[in-house]
Image (cartoon, rainbow over all chains, first blue to last red):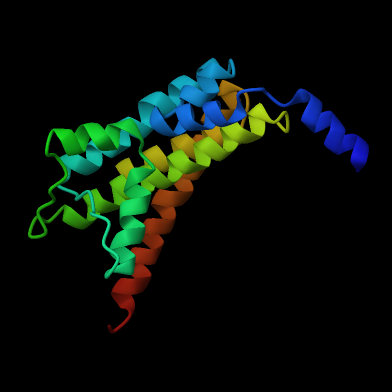
Length: 132
Length: 50
């Protein structure tokens, strides 16, 4: 057990947390940094495209509201998209149109893209720690 | 639903498999399962008197 822990610690990347931050900010950047080019490029295409589809379907970027816990959780999931989230905010995209037929679908796309990017960050962390 | 399933199965397959061939195989299986599951669930819910 102690030997396995020592082996993992020895093979851990020195910039693990910087890799995780990069992986969150730009989907796939963590894997690209770690030399996993194919995976990084796949994430770099799939996740921002899914986020863009959510905006196209008139989904909303939820605000952080303490009084509405579910809205706060959805905002947290949206934030998982990284820089594309901030670009959309800057361009005033993601206002959402609740009367649109596709509104809920758009929300599902944006929230799921954010949550999957968080999974990608965890995977990059595991790779950086030498566990994968 | 198909577009959503495509993205989710693509990301999961990329996360869970190492080679491109394995990723394509798992991605196709996941996509088929998501779409088929969605249709089956849709019909089941249609039959329920809600």
